[in-house]
Image 1 (cartoon, helix red, strand yellow):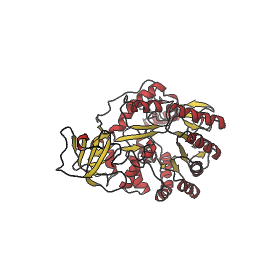
Image 2 (cartoon, rainbow, N blue to C red):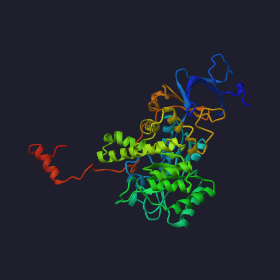
Image 3 (tube, rainbow, N blue to C red):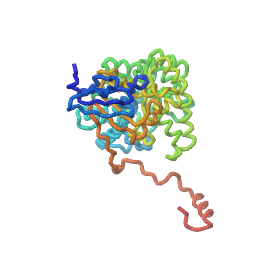
Image 4 (tube, rainbow, N blue to C red):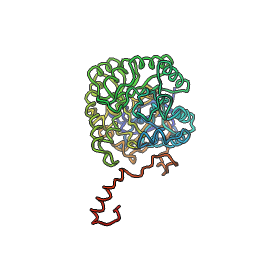
Length: 458
């Protein structure tokens, strides 16, 4: 049993949020080795051994570190599928991911799930973090997302067979079983299935279900037989229903649910990661990136059409987890990991305390560490975030990096240093001549507007 002599760190006098939805309390957090040994009422008179480091958290919020249940650490912020699938190299992707993962820590993220990675970089990065070779948050990972030849969300960029980027196309029962077993042999924590995809002439909301129920059940049974959970990308009612019925352990998105899908999700109590951050950033700020009004309205509509059903699922006991899709140009690393909490409050109608629980204690499931992380309770791993501001009233405080005073991972303080500026390696990004095709009438119109000058104005 730990005694006061074993304590090496005390966070004193802060407004402590336990991450389980309870209101803040004025308390001290006592840490020995990598565990919390006590969360007790603040006692300014209590004395500790001379070797015990003490952090004065007076006037600060003390809470569990954030967990991001949907982060693509190997993608490095592409602007397009073309860039993602044809401009990334395996070794370089791993090296850059090892640098990017430190941006998550600096933003208060002490754990994340990367459900599908380029090549096999996810397993390698996770192992490097756990071995202490690369500093980073706790990480769980999948391998390549299982796709059918429909191509997931990348369509014709995906081959009819084989692997490209983060996706592996499987055709038929034998290939499904073989690939699930191969990934488990490699050491994945999750098997991911792209249950839905886009087709050129679809006429349904969301995406088209591209797997049969029997195929989904085969994935689940094969993975579960070997003790590995399954996560599914589902944008559409039928896909969400069938994934829940098939025994999936986690659903990404689960948008556009109908009553049948909602009933299946509630019956299975399968947790959902809505991942609205990408859509919200595009809808709210897409004009700054040159996104068209049509695409911005489309993504805003996905939130509006799905928020009520997700709230009904939550009220019926279905866990909602916070994930941000960080790793794309609209969701760069270290910038938006708080944003899903904001959207949960604004669009789904959760209280700040409920949203915080979704980003901490509920999210422990994504790491495979339920009951071990995500809460400030005795016996839990000491992953803490100390913030200047009342997070229990305003979750957007977490988006201000200057307010993050301390990040503690496994009982050790993280050195919060700004990421150094970097350049992109040759060929890493798609090169564009311009944003539109140069038609001759554009030139003539520009000359006319310039009063007949032969030179086209810039």
